[in-house]
Image (cartoon, rainbow, N blue to C red; front, side):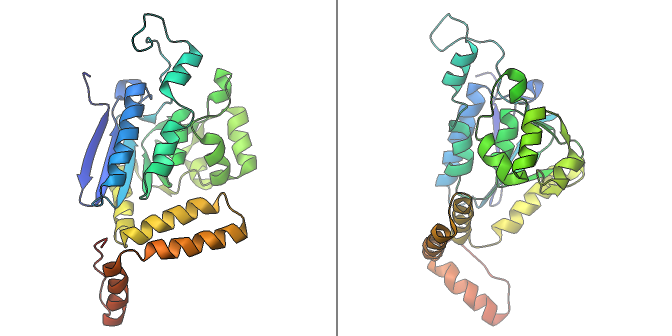
Length: 267
């Protein structure tokens, strides 16, 4: 490996993951995909990380799957389109790692174009912060494909069914202002402040008790797949999980009674 395709940084309780293939607009090859999946598991196992920011280096967030050339591992045969999809595992593995494996809030800082599987990655995150440089494009229909990497699950839940159909069927560019208007972006900030603003949002989230936050994330995810009655059961489970940190439970009450800012530890 001649270059680190995923950069990792820590700012106190915040983990920052930066896709680092700027010459390819951070196109997702197998090495980058595997690195993201591995980092997601590392973050899940690290109790000192309370929130995550995912972004791209250079002009793009991610232009999608890197389907440019290459050969199958251990083979002299060129990788066909179907072989690329199979060996890279686009359908499921990457979106599952971001959406399910990471049990802490994750924010996509969309620094440029997010297209195809790159758009799916951004949508797999809990929130998206963008700037005037942010652009989205579904792409799949242009490649005679239907959406993958979770986009068909995430996009209708983010922007609604009709708007999702519009973006998927037309494969048009969605510029930053429209993306913010339809909810594809949750925050729109100046480009030169994008990472700082995303980290500040992550810090606001990381101020609160982390065990309760993990439970909250899971309950919100379950709400997108459950009936009302099922969600009441999920909430009951979530409340029990949220109180697995006795210090933070006591601290929440003590700080309120003493009229001071709480000091949560995750314990």
